[in-house]
Image (cartoon, rainbow, N blue to C red; front, side, top):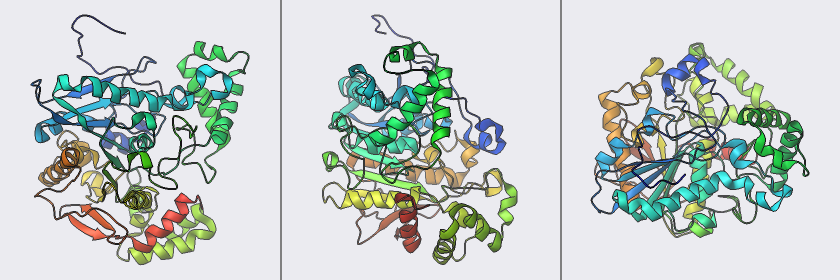
Length: 467
C-alpha cells in the first residue's frame, strides 16, 4: 500500500506463502543452513536495500535473487544473505527481494480467462517489477540504475537465466551471475497444463467457478500443489527443465527456453558469470557412516539409481577422479556442474559479451568436513559473510581470506563486467577452446575443463534426461 509519511523499515517484510520447511528435522542440515523462516503473507512483494551512503554517488547495484527453486525461500532465509559486508567491501549497493512462489507465482491458468493470461509467469514478473523499482528509485540510495548486476543461487540462479530471456527485463540489468543453477529449459505449456488440471480438480474448480480460487486459504493451495506434484511424479519430458511449477515458455512473457537451444539473443551483450560447487550432491552431511563407503558399495549405489547406465557412469567418473574417495564420487553426480559448462559454452558462442566459468571447491571443516564444498557453500564467500555464516565456514582465517577473494571477484564483475583482481591468477573469459574455469580454493587456479569426459557424460544424462 502507498504511504505519504516516513515509513518504518525496522524488520524484514513478509515472505511468499510456502510449505513448512521440514529441513529442521535433519539436524546436520539445520545446523549448517540456520534457516530464518520468516512470516508468510500473500502481501509479500518487498525489497531490501543496503547502501554505503545517501550521497548522490553512482555505485554498482548488486540485485540478489534467493534460491529455493520456484517453490520456497526468501530474501532473508540465510544469514549469509545480509548485504552489509559486501556494501562496505565493494562500495556497492545491494538489493534483495521477495516475490510470489509456487502456486501463487507459477500456476498456469491462461486457459481459464484473459485475466490469467500471464499467471504462469507472475512470479518472474514480480522480479521484473522490482528491477523497474531499482531503475526508478535506486539513485536515491546511491546506486547507478545503468549498472545493475542480477545474481542468484540455485533457484535464484535459474531465475537469473530466465530473466535473461525475458523481453520485459531487457535493459533493466547489465550483468548476470548464476550460481549453481541446474537447467537450460523451464516448462512447456503442455506440461504446465497437466499440473494445473490436477490442482484444480483437487480444489474442485473449473472454468465456471475459477474465481473461487481467490477465496481459498494459502495452506489449502499448498496442499493442492503438493498433491499434483505427487501425482505427476519426478519424471519430466525431455523439453522441460525440472519437475513441478516453474516459469512457462508462453511465447510472450517468456518467448523461449532460457538457454536452449542457444543462449538468449536479447541479452547477448550482457556479461555472464556462471559456476557451481564441487560437491553439489553432497551425501554425507547427515550420514557420517557413508564416509566408509567402499568401491563395491559405490557401484551398488550408482546402480540403484541409474540402472543400465551405472557401469558407464562409474567407469567414467572413476577415471576422471582416480584418487577420490567413493563417497566423493557420489557427490560429483549432479546436474549443476555440467550444465554450468554448457551455459558458458552457449554464451561464449554468441561472440558478444564474455562468459566466465568458476567452481567453488573449498571444503568446510564443519561436521568433520563431511559436507565438503556443498550446495550453497559459496554464498557467504560471495557476500563477504564468512564470519556471519560461521556454521557454514567455521569462521576461520582461511575462510575469511578466500571470502575476500571471492567477494572481490563478484564486486569487480558487477563494476566492470570482468571478475579479475590482484588477489587471483589471471581468469580468462571462457570459450570452448580454452575451457577456462576458475577453481576457488585455498589456492585459486584456472583449470581447463577439469572434469572432461565425466562432464560430457553427465551433460548427456541430465540435459537429455537419460536417467
